[in-house]
Length: 278
Image (tube, rainbow, N blue to C red; front, side, top):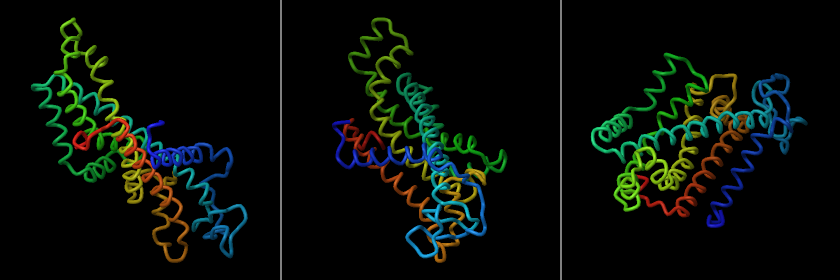
C-alpha cells in the first residue's frame, strides 16, 4: 500500500470509513429502517428550521429516518456490488485462463460467447429475467455477475496467450506439469494484478448499475432499502424535500468516486497498461 498515490490512499480511507459506517451502523443506530411515523414526515436535516431531534438527516414522506435508511441501503448496495464483482471476476478469470492457455476451438467458443453477450442489451435481459423469476437480491447478483464476466475474461485471455509462450511456462510443461498445474501455479499469479484493478473498477460500476435498476423498480424489491430505491422514493421531492434523495445520491457518488480513484491507484501500482483493459 506504500506505493499507492495520495488520491488512492484518500479513496481507500474513505471507502474504509463508508464500509465501517454501513457495517456497524446498526450497532450504533438500532432503529428500524422500515419504521414509519407519518407525524414526522418530511422533517428537514438538523441545521434547518423544523428539524426533529433524533433524525439528524431528516425523514422521508413516511417519517422514516434517512440516516438509518441510507446506512441500511448501503449494506444492500455494497453487498450486491461486492459479491457480483467478485463472482464476475472469478468466472471471467477462469474462462480467460482456459481460453488463452488451451486456445483452438475452446478459445473461439468462449470468446464467441463473450462477444455475443456484450452485443446483447443488458437491460433487456434484466427485464426479461425479472419478469420471469421476479425481483430479489439473489437474482440481481446473478444478473450483475453475468453482466460483468466478459471484461476480466478478455483481459485474462490476452495475458494468458502472451504468458504461455514464456520460457518458465514452457519449462513447467516440459517437466510434466499438467494444464491445471501450469494455470494455477504460473498463469493465475501473473494475471492477478490486472484483475485486481478490474475488480476494483467493477465494484463501483455494479454498485451504480444496481442503484439504477433499483431506481427503475427492477432491482431490490421494496420494502428492502437500497440507495436506488431511496432515490426513487425522493424523485418527486426535489423541490419540496431535497434532502430525501440527497443522502443516498451522495453516498452512491462518493462510493463510485472512491472506488475509481483506488482502482486508478492500483493500476499504477501493478503497472497495468490501458491496452490490457481494452
